[in-house]
Image 1 (cartoon, rainbow, N blue to C red):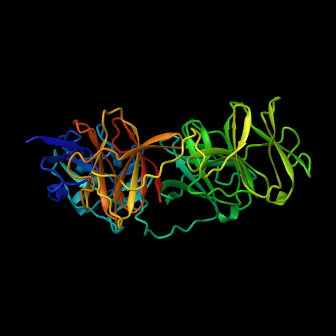
Image 2 (tube, rainbow, N blue to C red):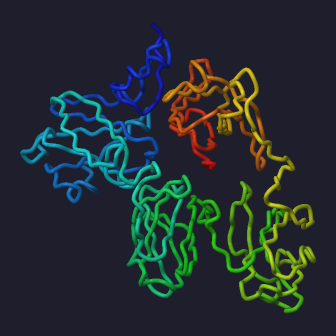
Image 3 (tube, one colour):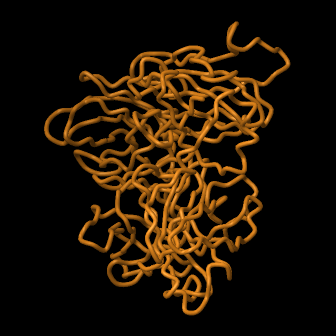
Length: 486
């Protein structure tokens, strides 16, 4: 019988549940041995929760090694990620290192990034399975205590204002140092993240800045304490900040409108090609917000999938009748890009030597208008006027000839293997998506992306109560979630 090898985070105990999903036997990569056994060592191969980053640090913890205080940070107890899959990690245990104890006495795992292991009900876990020396066992972790939330986690209480970070820096370890009014978070390298928190469907690291530091003007330096650091990012600790770290630096991140503005703002979709962008104002008050060339960009913000540079005009300036000149500070300018009373937000496209006011609700850089996916056509899913439909948007970067989605879980919502191809293709904010529409009522489904030609991988586990957007990449073990639409 042909066997299909699928990379997915499940245990052998669930295989009977999959019998109705396919007539083929299904063997999961995460269940297959990923590490060779060693004589005299006990091998634990650990299946980790979806969303565990390959750059994470995971430790084996028990009374035999001093608990979390003795184990976390000690290389002797750190797991190694399998080379072939991000879903499985392993550790070789020498019984001589257990200080007279045994794995059968109880152990659990701790993720440095996402916290201690717990079960699906968020109760602590203590494993007692112990392999014989020279052999292995599989151990499954249901979730991390600060992992992807089911929506019912207890509210996190913060100390002072918070710096939230989407960490795409690539650093193995992350620290935040501050200088300015004071070294607020200690000497170099500063403080490690306080914890992890789900913000609008995005897992973010966060730093509690301390209530006693409110109002300080600081320059933040994100670093790995190993010679790498990003350029300074200046803040005043009078609000929470949402930032994204990339290898190139720090940019403002907007989780569903979290950016707080000082008064009204001018948003610019900048396609000018200029090296710099400034905003000068004259009218009731000349040189408002600064003499020529005017004020520099306050920050960046993504609105409806479009990233704008913005200028905060200041709450004290509301009602001032002003002419706005956009310029590069080097002799190139666009006069009267907008003339207004500083009484509203303004969105402008700056392109081809022109400044055009736009509506952010409908504007698309490519000129395309988003298509409402609506309900699917026959024969993929019969239209049900009483059903609620949700859409799965996939930016297809696989290079496959065809892309199918198969789903298993509460029901096979896309039919039997290999599932089905997309219902339609649409362009949103200049990005082309394949769209699958499906009726849902809160069902839990496990998605498998495949080409119906032998190539496949587990993409994500979703709940059919919202729309989802993914990027499907060649050879990826887990689809990248671009944005969870509500």
